[in-house]
Length: 398
Image 1 (tube, rainbow, N blue to C red):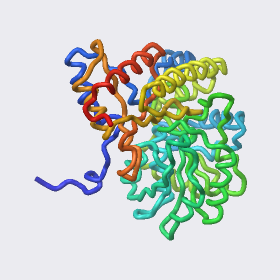
Image 2 (cartoon, rainbow, N blue to C red; image 1 turned 180 degrees about the vertical axis):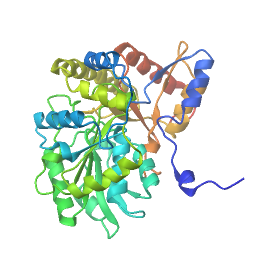
Image 3 (cartoon, helix red, strand yellow; image 1 turned 135 degrees about the vertical axis):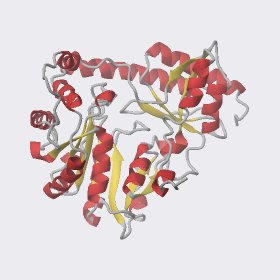
Image 4 (cartoon, rainbow, N blue to C red; image 1 turned 45 degrees about the horizontal axis):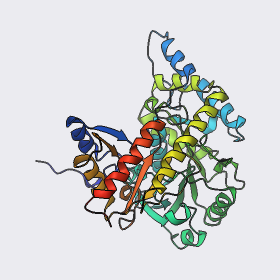
């Protein structure tokens, strides 16, 4: 048998999806599984999007331009302008989800073997994108005790060497829900400018900020226009994860021109997804108000419920719809398997994402899990009860 690639062998399994066989087996045994492991909202997609799909009347489903449908890019530029982000149509490249946007960004800006610094824990697939691009992730540790605030700039600076090409953040954050302040972003701006690095920012959860907090975009930072690369997506903003439409955005003309070559190699982003995404730009503001109000209630049920369980600690996030919790267990991955395979409470159990996969440093996250508050309030209340009862009898509790 021919050997398989080293890149494939080094590709990490998703901590979000790797326990799916355990969940499927639990369902085969008749258990109801509450999926807190994945950021798939049960919020309805805006009606304007569904109407656009139902009213599709083209006789041929054509390729779009490699950079995306022009009218959609123009509409997206207006969307950004309306929220205070000054970009032009030609600064925007439409991609197959935010995932492809980040892949294109890595492939455009970094050579194999070069390094990118990322505060951890971070979105687990960043590891996979780095492996795909031959890039080395260099983590800088954020801490659950202060809610995963930005690590000291000195911690970033001591990691910078001749191979360092950029810094990547997610704001608001997945998996932590942490929202970086304007002051924190300015500190990163100054560091990026000092060392002439790329500043990659994943801002797909921009609309979801709570308790009066406000998201500040890296595109609003002055003095580093050619360094900034913005990653965006419609998946979570409009609860349309299956559309698979994202965007790579930069005022760096040379960067966009080079990224377009990667876009041309994959031909074009999905036509249906772009039609749906263009329609989503007409979503009324009332939709977001209702969604944010709902997420605040869900967050409070889950986070307050977690903190009511003896031995559990969960900082309250100010953005996105995820939280990270430390549990009184030796190994959170073992616990996440056990609660699916060996435990139920009144025929029900929960699926969580063990946090180890959200860290590059494998010594971290051993007793942490990520949960997404994307289920209805009653499901979240039941999940807290199940988790509380499970921790009472789990043999690996500490």
